[in-house]
Image (cartoon, rainbow, N blue to C red; front, side, top):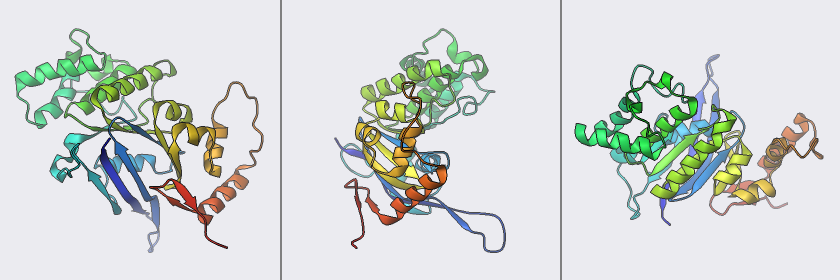
Length: 294
């Protein structure tokens, strides 16, 4: 199983307004991971932890301050930068905002095909095929506009648009958080099916530990832009090692438990998380923490 996308020491700084010194906010701090064919890596963390910033950098909507992103073909050779967007595509969080209300569904899917050199006849056939692949094979649906579709249908259109250029890596930035609970599972099952059929590498960004566990092979936990824990999905969720991961697991809804033991005030948990992060160094490649010798 070959690596497709390698991320090395990714860092992103933002200069804040205010005063002469213009302080710097580090949104992403030396994050490294590898996406491989047929597997899903989940990025988990609270709002502001740097998840969406990483997604935007991978989609080339933001430029990193430091670090390297290497895209490889199945034979291991590096893909030239000008072909990057042919292989890496993003599914945005909000299906109501990611589609232009003035254009038809067919236009949204046909545009990336035309940009990548397909002729009109070939494009029309592929639009129909892509809609069928995402279970939207309804008559005349391609001529409808986004406001005529439900939220789940719009997100399926967004997925079809991401696959249109022939993407091998899909970055899904909280793809079901804006959808009704009743249809979230259907969209996740669609992504899982497409991944199996196309042998895709997928980065799944979420704050929902339950879907992260069942939908991903590996979980990477972010806290204030840093990786604090990483490992197989079941291991990270069921036997968390870092205090922040334990806090996230304890905060997950559990209809069988009325309360949780061992969770203190937010201030104490925050101090414990910061202390644990400062006292240890995480190796992104071995998945282990090393602590300084006394």
